[in-house]
Image 1 (cartoon, helix red, strand yellow):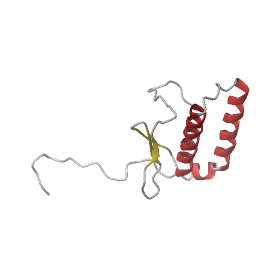
Image 2 (image 1 turned 60 degrees about the horizontal axis):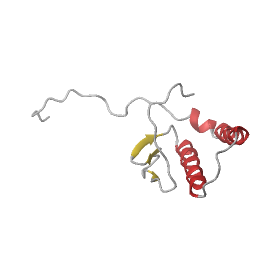
Image 3 (image 1 turned 30 degrees about the vertical axis):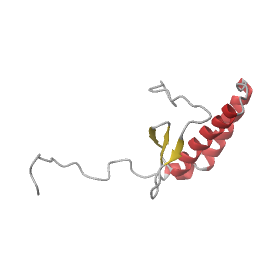
Length: 108
């Protein structure tokens, strides 16, 4: 769970939102801000949620009620439970490349 907000990204009906292309890439961008998720499946959840918000903004839908928010959150929770196996098998989160001590002007 999130404990505090670190940034706010405003959304409008015309906000740019796209996934990054790459093998097993879980990155996406929203309004020029880049994000990553633990898995491709999780990235799809984020992009779908953002797309749903944009559609509601486009149609000037009223703010959801507390009950509707509860339904949305439960649906997301249920979906995440179905992909839980992929999240557990996400692998090691250590860097793939070893850190080196690079000296400026030195080759080799």
